[in-house]
Length: 167
Image (cartoon, rainbow, N blue to C red; front, side):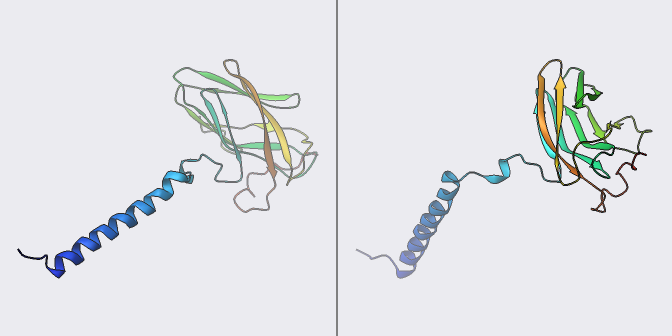
C-alpha cells in the first residue's frame, strides 16, 4: 500500500482552504444588502416616480427668495401611452406632454430643442439652500408632492442657467 505524496496533501489542503475562504466571503453578500441595486439621486436634485412617469434630478434654480425659479431635471415616460405631466408650485403650473418612451429635459435657454421644455415659477417663496414643494401629477396616476432643492448660481455648472432677477 502506498501513502499519498506530501505534494498531493498540500494541494488538497490548499484547495480546501480556498473553498472555505470563498464560502466565508460569499456569505457577506448573503446577509448584506447590495448597495449598487439601490436607486438614488446621484446629483443635486431629487427623483420622483408617478405611475409610468419618472422625474430625475429635479431642482429649482433661482437668484433669490421672491425671484423667478427655473425647474431643472428630466421627465421620462416609461409607458407605451402618451402622458400629460403637470408640474405645480402653489397656483402656478406647467403641463409637459410626453410621448411613449420619451424623455423631456427641463431647463432654460434651449427653446429651439423639441426635447427641452422651460418650466418657470414666478416669485418663489423659498430661498437658495432651501426646499420648495413641487406637485407632480398625471390624470392616470394622481399627484405626489416632492420637496425640491433650490439652488443659485454659486456652483459653476448652474451659473448660466439661473433666471435673471425680475424687476
